[in-house]
Length: 129
Image (tube, rainbow, N blue to C red):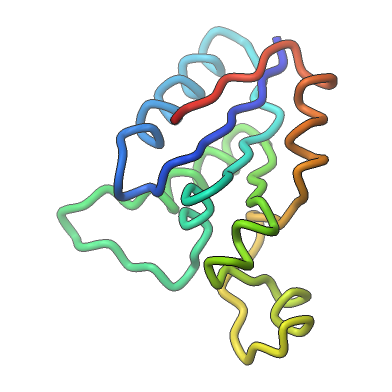
């Protein structure tokens, strides 16, 4: 089964990221494929490369990076939500004349069209709010 995950909450504010990671790992263990993870609203903060959690906190950015490396899934940040929150890749930083880019691969900025594709290209879309 091919699955898309949608996340909406900031990584430090809610357990939805931990729940989504546990769900995604369980899916892989049973032979399913996670096609993409779409981060929307405050969930885009997970792609902020300049964050450095305290040593006693879970580094959810790194957890998603590890999961993407393990599974081959796409990590997509909503481009509008990201720009509104100052998360810019090199292209968007240039567009907004910002001296700093704060998003790096494998996180990608994508529009809601990519979010909508999940409803047609995957067998299941699971949202974590």
